[in-house]
Length: 412
Image (cartoon, rainbow, N blue to C red; front, side, top):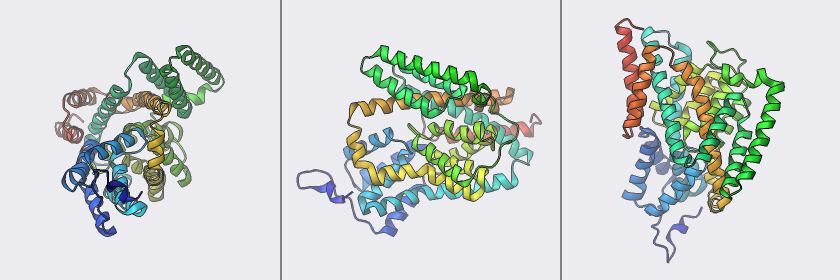
């Protein structure tokens, strides 16, 4: 993208500065070092410096770019950094900006993953803290379902689509089929063809019923996915790359939407990771200065060491880089087409259902006695009542403190 597009003779857009590449990389590396508090805080930080203080673009320009990335898959804050780097120094600038923003979180997650694998939770104090953190993370997932669903499930038919998607997830239906059905059904409903939507749903339900009749043991895997220990073969580096790419392409509405896809690959199907370990990775991702999707690095590390961690991370972030560097303008034009927007909205509704279906085995792994139940309930209440941007981090930290306190009292 040419920076001159932002300052034509008629347009009121300010001019994006052409920064030296080292300075550009350092700017976004600094953003990454300060990226605490989740996507809302990260986006606000980028807006404050580049729009309000240095006036790279107008507020209206920023809002248009943010709206596009909220529709497209990938972490919005990271995509905005790539976009602004591209505005300043073309595709090389976009690549450096994106790498700078993700590097601190990636390195910290690699360190945490190494410590987790080599030292584990052998200390009873650490185990007590992580047990309660898992319950708090389960509350975060439930809150995410409600938050994303509140923006997407705006009618009873859409609520029904999400509910059926959750059932499909529990039955082991492949997520791609579920998402295609959700998108097409939403398009039919938007066009006023309720009969067409019902016919499509009935045909899909019949197909799923026939499939389950012949493949019931395999398709029921997600219902029995909470093994006490990993029982599957380690995945190949290539399969981890593909798993990350699939998750990266389907992160609509935030990093929580990647949970069902990575959990399915690592726990339900692959069997090389437990639900408890998956929750530990989510907890670590929630407290690091990075997009939450960095928890995928932990998943890859447990599956294939350093090579696996880098492979799955590359897959997860590849769409965020590619869609911005190669396809921002054509995608922006395409998303003005009403049918395309409606289909993507339907896909988002389906993803909400998938998260809900995935949350059940994770809840079963996290909430298993009275103390974890109480932490889950209190964390959920705090998350619903407080809108402060650091609330998720505070909830995780307080849950860890609660675990340490219970252990000190001899209750764990």
